[in-house]
Image 1 (cartoon, helix red, strand yellow):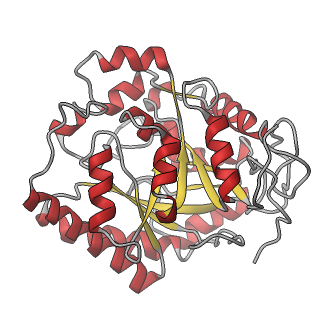
Image 2 (image 1 turned 120 degrees about the horizontal axis):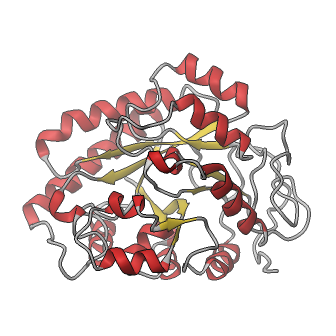
Length: 351
């Protein structure tokens, strides 16, 4: 088994997108309480809030639901058009309402070596047909001109500054397939134009690979900016098929392009080795986008992903036992319960 060179503590969490929750207007979405029920049943101690408008903004109601299931919220999400200057008011309203909520909920644990504590505000660009149909195709995806790019950067700065100054929440920008921040040149320009003191990055292994990049290389290049990570895996056969079609990103997900971790083509041994050598501490969220009508295998898929990652654990710890992931591990602590660490995580004490 691989072993950490530097002690770090990792909690593996999940997100509503595993149940197909991406578009809040989709009539087939499961109830948010069902997502909480099944996240806890699968052994997770935490999850993301999901897209704006999915879970209620009532902190008392959501806190009660989380506490009843031993869960915490590790991140809220801005998933909207970041390009249009006219969308600024909407983006800031979402930022204020999401941050008001997540900072009023039970707080996730903070670990030694974690530069910014959770909950985070994950910021993603979305809502552009021309880029949605070019997801994964760097050669044919139209890029923003300088003025439009500058407008998007201004919107991101406004979101991040509001989150930080009013709520103490760290904004992390998530390059996303089908948005205007997806490919290597766009991430490089993002790092140039948004200073580290303004916002960090959330690197998603699945979106990185979908866009034709090596996840380990991207993690290494932007390591000093990365405060939160998403894990996915890609079915190579489905990926080959959808890359030959004119298809929207989430339609590709509905065909099964994202699969349980360990069953796809992303090299998680290499990712583990890199994160272990850097002593990554904090949260990693497992995701597997799908059509919500195809949610029958969610629990099996989540357990499969967690069990695969648990193979990288070494030695006993408060976060995980060596061997298969056991949902009863640390069952009395919502910050740790069932949170399989990928490598030996040290003492596991809360700050």
